[in-house]
Each structure stands twice: as C-alpha cells, then as structure tokens.
Image (tube, rainbow, N blue to C red; front, side, top):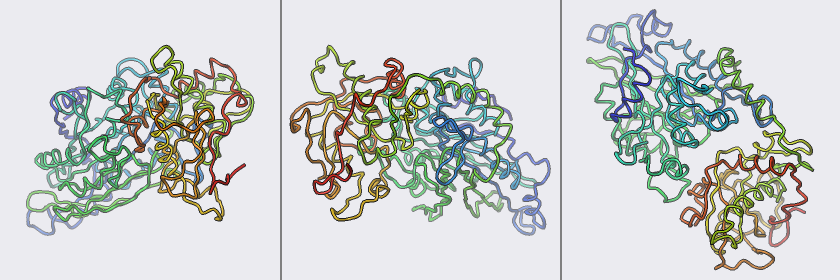
Length: 612
C-alpha cells in the first residue's frame, strides 16, 4: 500500500501514533543469493522439516551534520584529517549500495540517528541564506535530495535539527520521502507526539508470512535546554527510557517481529547539563538495559565509533546489540539479523553489528551530481572576500595559550553585548566574554579575509546571551573550565599534546574569558587552579557584578558549568554568533590584532609561566 508522504506526516503528528506501512522492502521478485542459500533444503515452518530461517540487514548513519559531499567548506578543499577519513552522503551511498547488493535490496533497511541539517556551510546556506520553505516551492535541501535518492526508510531527529527553528525543520520534513521519528518530542500543551514516534516496515518472505520490523525514533532531552528559544512552550522532550517503555510494547502489539531503535543519544548515561532536566543526555545503554523487547539500537549524538556494543536487558536477560558509526558519513553501521519461523511467527535468533569505512570506496556519482549545483552555489558564497587582516592569526595554540584569534572572538561578543546594553540598567557593568577553541585549524590569513575564513572560527550555530554573574561566580566558572588541563607536577616535562582534554573533556567544553586576567596553575588539583584573578588591574571582588557574554549552549547548561544556567539573563539574540562575527568584519573592514587582546590568561606551574 502506498501512502502519500505528507499524509503520513500529518496523520502521524495529528493522531500521536506511528503509521504501519507495508513497504516494498520485502517484495520478493527473485531470491537473492542469501535467500536462496537460506531456503535450500528448508521446510516451511509448519512442522515439516527444519524451521524456516530468514535474515535481514539494517544499515545506519548518524550525525551527518550537513555533509553531502567529501568537502570542507572552511578550507575550500576535499575533507581530510589525521587518519584520512572521508565524509559525506555521496561516499556513504556507495557503501549502502554494496551492503544492499550483498544481502538483497528487498531485505535491507536504511535508517539514520539524527543531526542531519546543521553543521556545514552547505546546510547553513539552505537554512539562513536561501532557506528552504517546503516541498512544493523554493530550493530543495541538499540533504533531502541525497537521502531521498538513497531511499532512507526513516531518520530520528537530532538535537541540532532544532537549531534553525521549528518552521525550518517542518520544511525539511516536508521535503523528505521518509519519516522523521521522535517518540519523545511532544506537543508542550497536549503531550501528544509532535512527530511520528515509529514506523513499521513489512519485509516479504517467500513461503511464510512477512517479517514486521518496528523502527522507534528517540531524540535528545537536552533540546529543551540547548534550543530553549526555539522550543519553549511549543515542544517538550521526555526521557528516552520513559517513552521507549510506552512504544516498544505498542510495536510488539502491532505484531513486530524485530524492534530497532534509532536513538540520538549516546551510550553511557552521562549528562552535560547537570540536573537542569531530569532525563539523561546519553541514555541508549539505559534503553537497552531497562526496556524489554528491543533487538538493536542505532546510536548517535556522541560522535564516536562503536562498531558493536552488547547490553543485557535486566528484565529478560536478552542481549541488545548497539552500534554507533562515528559522524559526518565517515562510517556506516551494518546490523545483520537472523530469524527463525516457528509456531506461526518469526523469532530473532541472532544480531551482530559492524561498521564500514567511507574512505574505502568512491563517491556515488549520482548522489554527487544531485547536489552539485547546491554545492557550487555555497562554494561561491563562502569564498567571497569580506575584509582584510593585518597579520595572520591562528588557533593552533589556543588550547594552551592566549591567542589573538580567540581574543578577537571575545572582542566581537563583548562589543555586541555592550552595544545591546547601552541605555539599560546594566550599561555600566563590566562585560566579560567566554569563547572556546572550537577549531584548532582556524586561521585568519594576513591580507584578504573570505567569509569562510571568518566562519571557520565558529563552527557551531550558537547564538549569544548575556548573563549576570558575581565575581565569586566568575571564579567558580573559571575553576570549572580549568579542569580541562591535566594536573602536571612542577618538575615534570611538558608535552602540549598531553596537558589538555583531561577526563576526555572536549575542546568545546573549555572556556577562555576576556575582561579579566588570570593564571591557571596546572600543578594544582582541579578546583584550586585560578590565581591572580583581576579586573581593571585590581583583584576581583567576589560581590561585584559582571555581565558575561555567553553562547546559548553554555548559557542553557551545556558542559555543566556552574551558575550560568540559572543566572539572570539581561539580553539575548537569535542571530548566530558566526553571523555576528561576519557582520563585524564587514562593518569594520579590517581586523588588526595589535588593537585588541593581550596577555589576559596564562598557564603556570607553582607560579612559573609555562610559555613565554
């Protein structure tokens, strides 16, 4: 039965139920090699001969983040990293085609675990510069073009799907030929699903009833914090475990023989936002452990490669197989599921998973051609010259030194907040600013500055907020940030590649503050490292008030910094910080590092500076 895409989406959202589709995934035209081998010498599962067996394959991607092609819009070249990964849907499409050919196209499903429409200048362009408006008019989103061609069956929503607001997300949803699933994205007033919770696919089997596969989509509760401005009062985001306990039994009641979850949530139960909301950020392992009836989980959100992780369900004792295929289309997860037909129904007998590497194949020429016009338009956009820089500024040392390029970012944010507060009750308060070394490869060259040079300094779609903090809270904030460094004895050798990222803290969770001067003594334990904290040449008064220019992710509780999430907001802006930086350069024309910044912070050991 064919069902119009828009009817499917609208009916699902209105009724709060998933829609069971009899798809073409299992239409048996001719036996695949795998099917022929399975059926040779087998009976029909009715007590005559051996039980009938069948196998199917589920392919999974996650955290594509706007990567349609193997291209880095910030370097204007093909993507490459230290381990020579390739990225993009054009590469993934080749892996998918190979995996389908091995198993049989009609017994293979393709799903995604979210974060599709944010992350590159390609996706930014079709959200902000030439925004998509729906399926019937305006530009087509390149990610929808590629994924529709690849015949995705379903995708879970990621938290970054909400970065550009719900109307843009709805426009993308309208352009997709597959459902965007989120059982735990609900209407804030009715608590009914705002998106389809699940999809049921039927895979036809010769000589036996079809195999029903239920696909449950779960997104991240942190959306309520990270995109508060876009979702507050409109949508709510309950926990993954709580919603899975509702919908997995429903899928089993619908006769599903196999239940797959696609979760935009990591494995380990950790949370970056403290107790701001009661649901863990990374809950996929908890879903496997606490919700009976799940066979496999495609994991997303954390950008790590986990080919196969096994979690035992505490109620049934059954092993659940989880797999996370890195990010940006670098890997493809492959779940192989074996079943046996016995006493009138299919039973899963084994599940195994692996990942396949996109750098082992060529790009799919059809997918590449589908998005080439959109790609070329964005390349021209990011390479336009918007200003000049008097000297090269690099972020390469920004994780352990005070560098002009981070000082510049803080200058722009401080200037923006100061201008916004002019004439208000907060106009006379000193403005501090936080910035993180998001990209160690960001560079402003000496001479002409292109838009991509500037955009490469700020690789996230964060917006700017201004929070009120006391001097004591500022010190607490800096102490938390300084936990990024590995404690190093005064006489120990210093290797700059090993003194950062303590406890696997990512660079984006390390904040550098402007407007105050301070030392970080890494000979001391975390929590006791900030010394010589001054403002305007005098020690910071613990009771003094400051305005902190802070990105919305951190302001909402991201990385669990103290005080800032609950602090009073005195101003906020809906424009991306990246745009604010670009506009500053366009307005001023010249970036001159000799006119701003300076040595505001430094690393020391027992009071001795580590670097000159």
